[in-house]
Image (cartoon, rainbow, N blue to C red; front, side):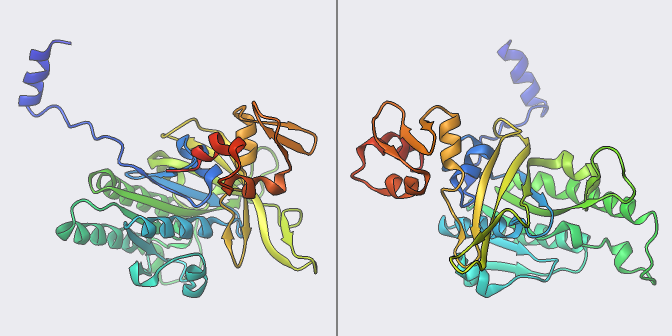
Length: 328
């Protein structure tokens, strides 16, 4: 390309600076990091919107909490917009959240939630222009638009969904340019609901945002867990957690349509290594024969229950190449 042409375009103000990748924030699970960013240690992108959506009790809020914790560990700002009014400080602290470092707000409407986000981001940037910001909005599904909130009646009408979708689109158009400019990773929690009366095709629909929200997403993650077969129980048959899968349905950072498994034990949080073994096998780094695994190119055999211990054991030389994948 003619450099003189480029120079004239730049002088005319027609060119914008190409912003490099702003970095990533770990999700707290190596396998999920991998299917989002292509790297076990990276995670969600700074400068974009990442959505976790799914039915109730599929670990969406836990993923968001782990991301906020990882942000705090890195020294980033952490913001929680809690429109559900369901934040449990004790549980969040058990997952590693430092409440003194968490910027917390509980707005009443959709528009107020996005306004709080914008005002907080700009207030931080007045004194600190560089440190990344990680914000979680939990959840966009339960936030009424101002029109719904100020309505005189509790009775629904056929226009409510359209009104909320329009409000969501307007808010996203305003907040989205700020994310990359101010180094912000925004995590949005949404719910899946079933359309009434649908007999053919997929009855699932996003609870809030409509198509406008999907267009603005950098990463879209669907959380799935079977409430009967995916339960984790202790020796006394008490339910202590859940297993499930995360499906990557949109991805501007890496290859989309990949999925991984997760494990959540309620009093411990996410198992950081859950799902990694299957991804390593799919990448040809681990081989499997029945219930036994081995690192490709070695004779060392192990079972899945021993994977984490072997990975963390510094004296396990066979695992050295695998171990490097999980180190920053």
